[in-house]
Length: 324
Image 1 (cartoon, helix red, strand yellow):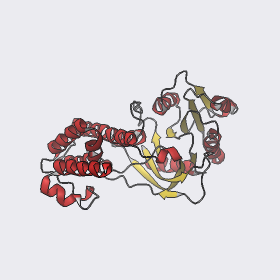
Image 2 (cartoon, one colour):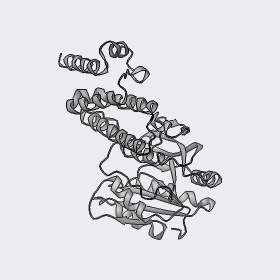
Image 3 (tube, one colour):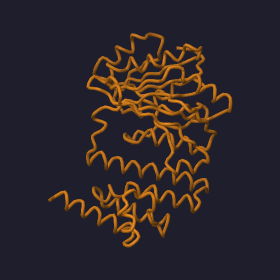
Image 4 (cartoon, helix red, strand yellow):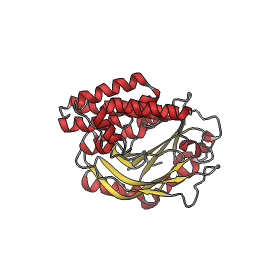
């Protein structure tokens, strides 16, 4: 562990004894080019051998164990409070950094005085033992984030470890412990909406493992995603209103973004659906989904009936068909 770190890498972990070594080792390899690292690993009160594994690293990492399980966002906030590096990188304990990428991120951040550096990332399916399954790799390019804040409202963002953040820029910013599904999107959007300078590095920074349980789509998962989606959009909207930056064009874009999860709310949470539909109309009294509605048959239906009644009709038919 370096006293004066270039980068603080924060890793929350819970019951990852079988995978945490790969995550930590991928961080330690970043030091080969002389990069000064502080690796903060926060064990969120694991019940397996995770903390014993951390102790094996001695002073190479800053490992600590929480007395109570509070979730990954709480663990990240604890780690962030201990960070001393000029820059901060977050990494989940089942993911791995690409060798040498952190040096490139720091170089571009220093060269252009960036507050955030965004990179590409990769997804790979994990087997029963957590190891990556060959041939399942998917690669995603780093998004263009100019002009802000519009690109955020267009849905551009990066997941947990595809952002490098200047620590002074994110001072006072915490992960929302009330979120568990879309927490990384929330974090990035709130950081980006501080409207700092964002640089882009067109290479993969890390590999995210997709476990079998992550791919199960249940009604409870869908409704949780939809609710968190709207919570995060509300935060964006409040931020833009406070700064007098919510133009009519941005209000219309927000209305379209709210609409994306409206069908789920109509199926599983009618009160939230009605509230969201009314809010969409307040943002754009003449709202018609247009291209944001991916189901082609719904576009003429929303124009004929209005988006609220069309969505309710679609949900009614879907329930009927499901019962048959």
